Image 1 (cartoon, one colour):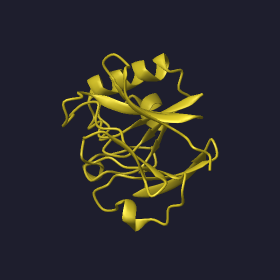
Image 2 (image 1 turned 45 degrees about the horizontal axis):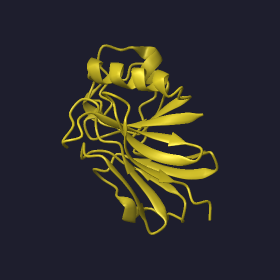
Image 3 (image 1 turned 180 degrees about the vertical axis):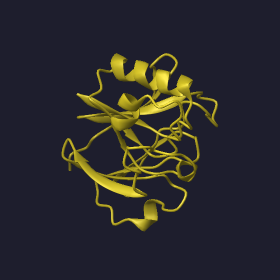
Image 4 (image 1 turned 45 degrees about the vertical axis):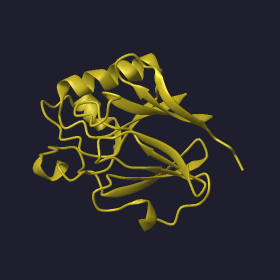
Length: 165
């Protein structure tokens, strides 16, 4: 099983379609969003299914009967504690993170996957407004690894296995 990690959709129907194709391709059980969903066109089944935080652009959008996402949230999946934020207000240094935790952020639209002080740091980039030569990207959170991949052909751009210290 796996989860997709996305950010900065900005209400793009094309971005949503890329994410849905990736979810099907990887048989992902869920989608984690680091903000700036900016829901437009309301495909409620998609927006309701996100484990999401609020981005700086989300404040301009009506979420109708969907709970407005928090600025930060913590989840535990596959035994890993994940801290999720958009990245415009809070950064890696603002949280008490332990080795093997996962820190997820967005905002820059530039994909990042690295291990910093024992913490896995992930920015999935953007499916709709990428700011890197990688094009539209997302991340995959599997039981044994984290990976950045292209939303155009699902090829892995980088991959980090979990060390389970």
